[in-house]
Structures are given as C-alpha cells and as structure tokens.
Picture 1: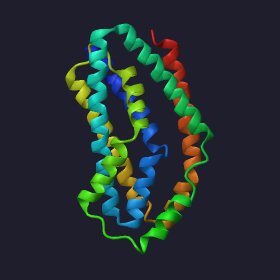
Picture 2: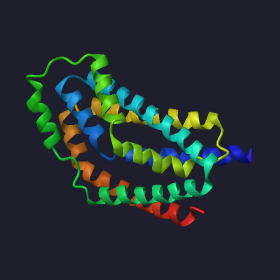
Picture 3: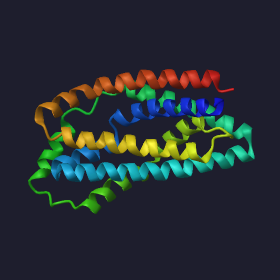
Length: 217
C-alpha cells in the first residue's frame, strides 16, 4: 500500500507539472491555432491527436532510457535529476519573461484562411505529430520531468499510466483550444490571458525546480 501511495503521489505531481507546460503557449499552440482557424475545428482536433501521439514517443524513449541509466549508474541518474531541476527553473524563468502569444498568430492564420486547401484527418494528425516529436525542447522537458518521477522501483504499469496521462492531457487541452479559438470573443480573451498564464506557470515551475534541486538527494 505504501508503494502505491508513492506512485500515486508521483502521478499527481506529473499531472500538475505537465498541465503547466501544456497550457503555457509554445510551438504546439501555434500549429493548433493555425490548423483550427485556417482549416477547421476537426483539423484542430486531429492535430491535437497528433500532438498526443508525439508525446507517447517522447515518453517511451525517455522512460526506458532513464531505466537503463538507473541500471548502470545511480550517480549519473542523480546528475540527470539535478540537470532536470535546473531546466525546469530555466523554462520557468523564460515563461516569466514571456509577453504571451498576442493576436499576431491569429491574424496570420486568418490571412491564410481564404487561400487554404482542405486538410484531411491524416494530414492534420501528421502535422501535429511531426511538430511535437521533432521538437528538441520537448525531449529536454520530458527528460527533466521524468527524471524527477521515475525511480528504480517504478513498476511498468505505473510507467504506462504516466505515459497515457501525458497523452490524454495534451490531446484534451489542444482539442479544447481548437474548439474555443473559433469563437472570436473567447479567442480574444484567451489570447489576452496567455501572458498571465505564462507568468503563473513560470512562478510554479521555478518553485518546483528549486524545491527538487534542494531535495534531490
């Protein structure tokens, strides 16, 4: 029971950290905006599914890669944990300095709308998948987060739960983005709030990174 409690706590921590990263606007957000406005809500939702599949790829190689490192050297693993904590602080500081997405991304998408061809489901999924899986910052983020969560005793079942959780969170969030960005009033208010979303996420990520760094042993 104690072991289950530990893994549940790690899972809740993952949900909190990953949710912050997902809602903080970045490259995936730009593609989600473009595909949902230029093409359709359906294209935006299929793009969100593509993001989720890309996340599964990151989670798979990071989780099993960390498992190999743990098996080889606890010292190296602890160094990765410290580096991961530093990276969380770094992206938190960047979020604190962010000015948000602004209306420019939407304006560019609307300018493309009239001359855009219809985007099929597979094309939208591929667009989201490639955007996510080829983003080197995503690799660093997952390495930073999962090095704090995975332990030598983490069962495979819980690793699968962690991966599925990330998939569901990113797919659900960007599906919601695709739906709301087609409503002008909601879209404008959301874009206006992205600056403050970044600031809030930045504070929490810096605090988490510092806490992890101080308790890493």
